[in-house]
Length: 431
Image 1 (cartoon, rainbow, N blue to C red):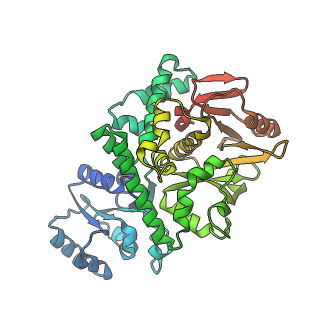
Image 2: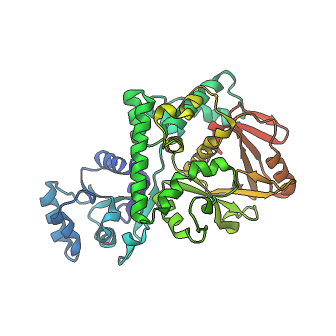
């Protein structure tokens, strides 16, 4: 955000995209307080008809700015003030006006929004090209450390990772911290609830509120209820280990092509992440992705934990007790797969995976693929031991000329197992 302010100098607006309740509005307002002489925040979710009407005619910007200052009681200073358009998707005319406001050049502009590409939110407007777009993800593991008052550990973890050293006695403590992060998640309200109450049941209740809000949003963008059903089924789909999201098992008489637009809208909401199957795994992974074959993850693992037992009371949610005591059953290992997906996305990676036939009518599956230079990096995720990694071995044998590092992410400490690099899962975001 500072780079945008200092380098663009008002030639573009800053558009902060992200899921609902991920902290976009708070971030934008804190930035405005710290970096500008004055600011005006226009919340399009709670705007008066009089204020909203100002955007009906943007032909006279002097008139617009005078009324804006009159309505808000805030004085604007040329090149020293910023105007925030919060939840801008609710007022398409305001987003379209960015083109003219930026050209005028008097002030800076920050837009925040979710569901920005949904058809009804862009219908009949010209989407401005004068936007610098950034994405706000849920808080990652490093930011979670900051939130709980630990500004040291993650920097030290980076040193261990770069020097290829095991943590030894410190490994168990970092894993305990990571398991707590998995349970609380990275949604700011959930983290704040944990900090203020130290009560995971209160955290779970807060996460349930967020999930219910997401389901309401899904029903608005897809009144048929398909989006809400697809979202609710994510834990069960990952647990089934089917190699792809099985649309037909969730929605009767539907397939991936029929729900493509619904899934695209879900991805646009940034509440989910999609890992696409790479049909021919090579350096150009996006060129061989199968748009109708994918896995679906919840963008925040804390929400995933609550979603997995959304129909049960908190006291029946065995994931909390098992994760805290480090006794997670093998059949709950899909939580780690969701965590790895979240950590890779937060680090800026697109998500790809690959399956291929094995003997006995089974499939081998490589959970994630990264592209690095002219090689690909296959990743297998284990929630416990590491003694076997057949899929990873078979994949590397089949595509030996394409393989760079081969990585196993698991819950044990750093070590090498032949050609395989076994990394504790907390190193994922450093890959």
